Length: 543
Image (tube, rainbow, N blue to C red; front, side, top):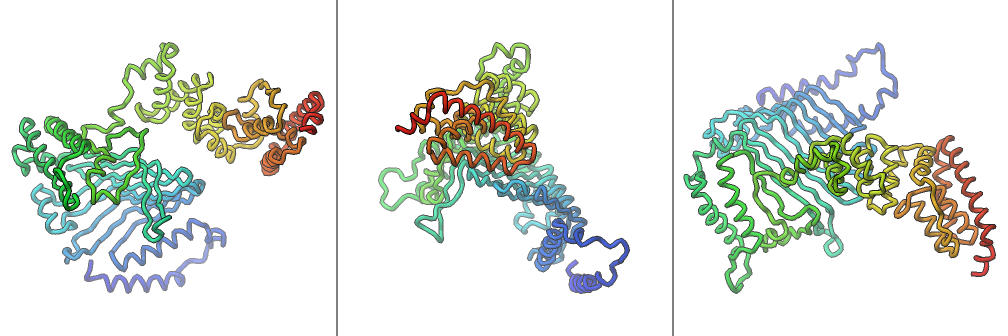
């Protein structure tokens, strides 16, 4: 291909100039069709690929753009990297399907980059010479990679991030890397040009699944490493010695004691390898390197200090080696799940039933079965279980927004964190009339606290609680009831609450405005009864 590149590029450039001249005129598209956002994005991307061709040769069969998903897909891709050791351009990487995805347009709170290649193949000539020799020793002349995934997702609201990377090489190995950060950003208060990363990690795991690669390299390892009886002693000496060397190299000059001594986390890591490796030799299926602390106990990572203090990195990450990832080891017992979905469910402890319901609804701890999970959680949520209601609302948010809103109301009334935010999100997709109806249903036959009529501050609190849905079931009509009386008593915050609800009604459709007019009138009638019956003008006029 290199010999033909100048001619091909000349012909390609000439063809580009001739396209407008040879285009057919019949059934000409409308101006709107020509200006479709998908077309505009595709033209920009095509321009980028044409610029990329100045560095590598690349061809593809088709490009599709889906702005709703924030996704671009290329099919039948061929790439010639033209590396310095590949003088004859024999390295040709082929990809059946390449997908690049950003956050969907309806998720402005999300930053995402996902690249996924399916059906990747390449000859060993693509590898550098030294790595090519290793492949040749393993008997490989090409690589077949069914799937490669790199997915990074950042939640702007929560500053949380998820990272996932996966690749599989047929006949060798599959690698899977996952990490969840409960907080991820930078601190630039003291170093504006070189900000310090602020990282809270809840879990990270690297899984290596053997697909035949271990059998290929097993003969290259020392016999003591492949003998389950002898390998523990060798591993303890080699790995422990390597970590001790890191400690000594990083120790400050003049340090007292043994600068190479392993700390507790380093010792635990070595012992985990000593224990797991012989078991892997007996059944070489997979190895998992993961953080050893509980995901509920996230850790602040001081990564810039690890180079000077390797022991700190081990202490913060607490790495351990195992034969299976923590989610697999913490899967719910089959007997427990069977009981929760069977006739004996009513006799179970509520905590166990909730665990099973959450596991089935999320797919963490049991195969995802949203129907069964929601059925279990609904029984608990109906009794006022706020945790079950929140989990149920999360499971239904994309599937059944109305039901999700109903259970989020219950969770908010139980002061569950995240319930109010979900209510706000769902109100953006549900009609306002339906929102008011769901609030009235969840509220039921409410008993208003007469003691709140004693002070303006108490009436304001009632109005704010009903408006927010935190600690009380959200109800705009009840919020208006208390805000009407508070505003009449001269409270500006109560007046602001009324203005917020009025704005929601103003922005709704005709049905929503009609429903609110009816609800507002009922609240106004009740407020007037309390105002006159309790002689609130006299009470608040004297305070």
